[in-house]
Image (cartoon, rainbow, N blue to C red; front, side):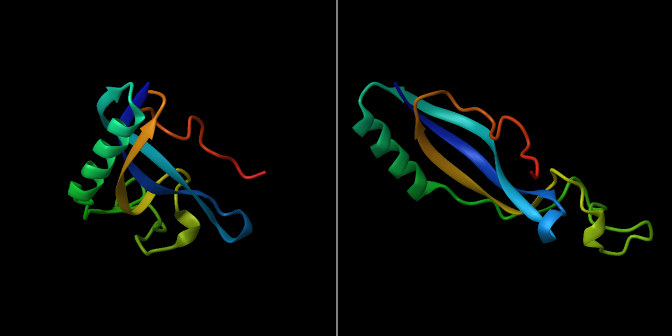
Length: 110
């Protein structure tokens, strides 16, 4: 089966190791259909991608104080791990399963 899944994908702070690292996390927005024929699924996905308007909201971690020291000054040493930063993207994907959050577990620096 082919599912046309829609996600909001954001860049999340992974940690301060090696100068700081980031990972992508996706939250399901919805499923636009389930199709036996893959061509039908890919055609719908292409049409949706052409119509989708990307979000304009800029995220700053978990809240407006994320990345600030105790005096409220911006300081990257205070960025909370897992917080989303920047603008998110809406992504349409054809997958073999219904939509689900990813990654299943937050990545860890090894």
